[in-house]
Length: 129
Image (cartoon, rainbow, N blue to C red):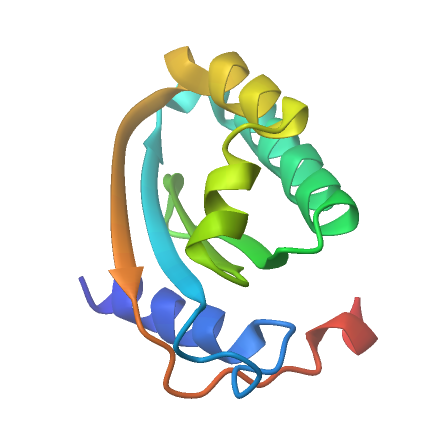
């Protein structure tokens, strides 16, 4: 459990947008995902492709960061933030999201979505990639 909270704290620190812009309108959530071990490589590729497409193509997708637990590689945590609930609902209808969701259904063992509220969201991550 300590590792999960460490990952969450890191994700909150590495987001790539200004949380002060619209703190009351933003939709921010964490997805805790467990992947069937035989699909780890495929799932990571699909998630990386989806995240890149969403951030590039959708102005309302503010950040989509994904990590996995090094001690438990099948445990993936995603931190995602949207400009608003409307931006999130629009995201769910995009071709790239539907491709990711439908293409990974059999790979996902469990999924927990947790709505969170930002406290501090600061990052220099993009300058280090």
